Length: 394
Image (cartoon, rainbow, N blue to C red; front, side):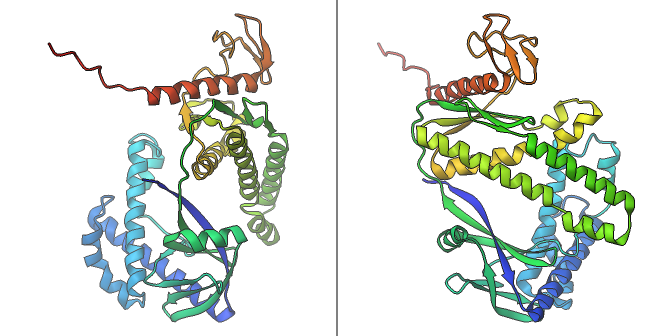
C-alpha cells in the first residue's frame, strides 16, 4: 500500500471589502469562542480535556453567540488539540523540569488564542471550485460564495488532484490565506546505488559526500543585519519604528525558508539523478544538548536545520528516494578513510587532519562521507533478516 505524503498548499484569497469584513468577524468570533471554551475546559478538567464531555458544556453557548454548527465543532476540537499538545510538551520535557518557572506558568492558566489565530474549515462549511479558482466559506453573516483565490500553477494542480481534509483560514498582515492539506501518493522507493551523506551546519548550510556545498555566509550576514535593525527599531520605540517592525516581521523566516527549499530540492534531485539514497543526521534535541558561549547562541537558535531536514524528507518521499537517519556522534572527529576517532583531528572549522593515517580533507566533507557510510550500514541492516534459522528436525 502506498503511503500518502501530507503536503500543505497555500492559496491567497482576494475578497471584496464586504467579504473581508465577514471573514474578520468570523475569525474573531471563533477565537473569542475558543478562549471561552479553553477557560471552561481548564476550570472543569485542568489539562486533561475530554472532547465529548466538553462539547456538552459549551456547544449551546457557542451557538447562542452566532457561531455556526460546523465552526463550533471545529473550534472545540482546536481547543482539545491545543491541550493535548501542551501535555505532550510537558511530558517530553520541552517546558523544563517539574518546578521550573516556564512549566509552572504554562500549567497555571488556560490556553489563550490570538484574535487572528487560524480556524479550520472542512466540506461542511467550505467548498472549492478549482476550475473557477473560487471558494465558498460559511460565516456568521451567511455563506460567502465566489471568493477568488490565486496560487502557483503547480499548487493548483496539486489542489485539483490531491486535496483532502481540512483547510485553515488565516489573516496575515491584512491578507487572507487558505492553507489546504493534500495527500500526495508517495512514490515507489527504488534500491539505492550507494548513499549521499548530508552534513548540516551553520557555516555551511549543507555539505554532501559528492562534493556539493552550500555556504551559509550570505545567510548568516543577512541574519546579523536583520538582528541589528530589529534592535535599533525596538530601542527607538516610536510609532513609526513599531510600524516598521511589523512590516519586517517574518522577513528573515521567509528568506531562510526559501533557501532551505532550494537546498533540499538540489540534494534530492542529485540523489534521484544518480540513483542513490540520502543519509541524514538525527539532530533532534541538539539545542538542549549543545552548550555554547552567549555570542554563539543566537546563531544556533536561528539555525533552521529541522525545517531543512523536513523539506528533504518530504521531497525524497515524493520522488521515491530512499532516506535514512543515522547517529551523528563523532562524525566530525572520525576519519572517513581509517575510522580513527580523535577530537584533535578537527583542527578548526574547515580543516580535518587525521592523526592516524594523515589524510587531509575539508572537515564538513569528511563528516558527510562518514554520514554516507553510516547510512549504507543502516540501510543494509534494515534489510537483513532477524528471524533465527530453522532448526533441522530429526
